[in-house]
Length: 196
Ligand SMILES: [Zn+2]
Image: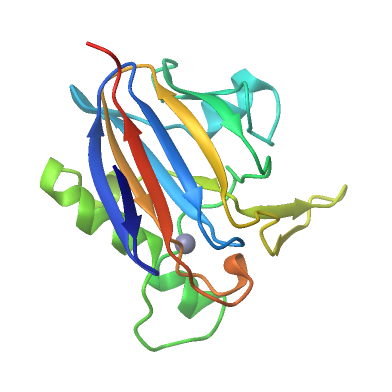
């Protein structure tokens, strides 16, 4: 069954080892932040540093694994029809909009949407790691300078990922203007259960 994450919101759910997760951009140019926890021990979680190290690239796509802070494989990326994701930047948070955009008003954020949805699994705000930012287009120059460009994803682009352990998943439709070419759209996902 295809689930829809409304614009500027999030979801959290469990995934069993062997299950597949399809994350879809139904309209195009929409980022989805994803975090992972070991369902048996939440202290084991997604690690950007371990993933970039073991995969020897900062561009994580089809064929790569997402690794944990304990150096275990959490997911395998089976398909990626767009091919551009980010694993450098932390989820957008209330402070992001205050510090980077000088916006003192309340602003929805991936960080809030992750920890509020993950609370039912006992995950606390400080537990949320750097997210795997699906469809996020971060460009980097030779001198190290980073810029956020519009996603290259088109309507219908998707990633298909296979769980390598029992997982708790947090997933968002990102709330940051610049990351989503200044319009907020939904994200869809589907859990494809392993044959029992
Ligand atoms: Zn975000």
